[in-house]
Amino acid sequence: MRHAGVRRGLFLLAAVTMAAGAGAAEPTHAFVGARLVPIVGEPVQDGVLVIEGGTIRAIGPAGAVSVPAGATVHDVAGKVILPGLVDTHSHIGGGRAADGSAPIQPDTSVLDAINARDAGFQRARAGGITTVNVMPGSGHLMSGRTVYLKLRAGDTIEDLLIRTADGRVAGGMKMANGTNSRRDPPFPGTRGKSAALVRAAFVEAQEYRRKLEAAGDDSSKRPDRDLRLEALLEVLDGRRVVHHHTHRHDDILTVLRLQKEFGFRLVLQHVSEAWKVADEIAAAGVASSIIVVDSPGGKLETMDVAFGNGRALEERGALVGFHTDDWITDSRLFLRSAGLAVRAGMSRKGALYGMTMAGARMLDLQDRIGSLEAGKDADFVVLSGDPLSVYTRVLETWVEGNRVFDLERPEDERIADGGYGAGQPRQEALACLEGGGER
Image (cartoon, rainbow, N blue to C red):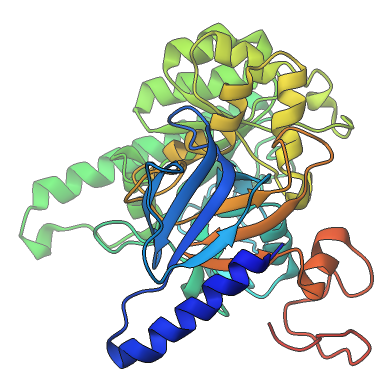
């Protein structure tokens, strides 16, 4: 997709860089001629998007936004630019947290089990995803801490981490109910026992907090450190959002009941039967991240999943986002979720908001990502056409001012379209693949 305008911009940038020497400013890029969809405002025809380093500096119509001298100019006429997509629930990287020893293991973290060179990260970039909530599985009532990642072109998990203002690794807590977490002891065998175990865990954490507060600065009175209860206190204190796998309407209501009882922050994940209890979800003020599958099937508790979940929640004023649950749906086809939701009655504006800004809000990252606004991270996607069209392709994906996917590169095209070598880890040693090797 690189046109003559881009080549001219690259030449100009090279000249400026040589003249400036070691003290050169951060690289500046200007994308001109595209239809810009900022999400928080109206689309801009024939727009200009200016980024400097990893930050958006300006956005607006041609004539109102000037192209800085020395910028690399990208001629994207006829294309569409969206904010980077936010996937609020994925399993790329192959990570696992909790094991079969207990149904509630909040002290574990998927961070310690992710392979940052897994091909899933490349697939996600090919789908326009720039931020992702990587979760452990749903086979436990509480399977551990999730991790929020930027899909930078990194080699280790540390390269991808998002950190909070106080330096902590950003992430939530994965919980689940329904059939997944019901099995032989020590796991619960019924839905009632599942809820009872969760209540008992939170009550234990409340008592642990009471003991800590009573001890004050007297270390001799403090209880022994308990990593499990410390993690639960992060949930109870609102420092860690619960991302709760749930499908059936009665299971959804159980989650809302527990949330009201203990006051933790909550994002409902999947909510296959959200349309049955949309009023209750909206009244609780709880966000929902829905999955849209074009070939429903699988377990019995999802038999009433509906394409109209997005519409039902949107009509009632509830916050709605989307996720892939990759591999349940493929990260490369994430935009299809918005299209299918709109086909079932969700508004176009709401669906695009759900793919971007709603997810950012669910991950507490709305000040950094989710929209094209000056001062936010330069995370965006260049599309060949309408975001909701089945014929539209992701042409480029940019994260913090760096292009991490380019359909014109043979190795990226292979990831986007499949074929021999597309599922290999990022470090390849296949001489028969042109452009093979680490990338």
